Length: 295
Image (cartoon, rainbow, N blue to C red):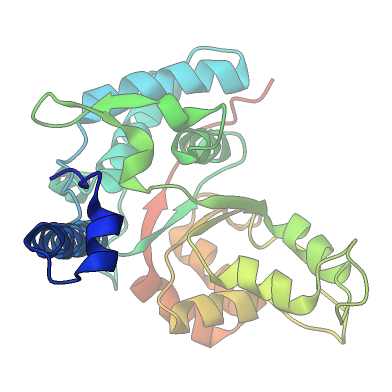
């Protein structure tokens, strides 16, 4: 209803004029309708959304991305036949793990003495120097990162054949070296007076707040900043207490090549028996053999 041309004049002469009354009634109804529409729209906007359930990733599709990213990172093609095809076996073991595929449990690389493999645990990969364990984990880390300009547009196929963005699966993890972590801790400042360095709180937030991968564990020096501390004994303890998923790679005891028991006892010797005992609860333990592929 349009506003009558004589509305103001009629209202001044007689506020109860039928034309005035009809127009003002119409305006109130329009206003009330607008308020109701706004309220309903607000409810729709603020309504909790049900997370979209993703289908599991198709493993062969993930392998295609892995091969592509491996070549980009390392400048060579991935060799499925290295170390009597153990490289292929490790790749599939890790792909089954990251895609929560029950075929993971069938991997002959899994250690099952005193422990039960479980997809809810982290990964501890122990092997000789140069067999590709670090390169493989770094390749997965690069694939899953999902950063701007990198894998934000990385598309995989799910098990139903539907294309999906890989980053939606939230498989990303941060990557550190053991000695680099000690160096970062050593360079920490104790307060917030400088913006150039991390303070201790920042450091511990990084180490304890998300899934992390640490390479070359057991090779790091002892930390002495703020007093001597067995840094990774503390990190592993805190991550265990806070139920954080952790990925680790390390080498066999150099004095006992390929000896699984001695490889695990290194954790007791360096970090204490409490950490050794928790290895079996925290990690799926994978042992590799073979010779170094470094040239």
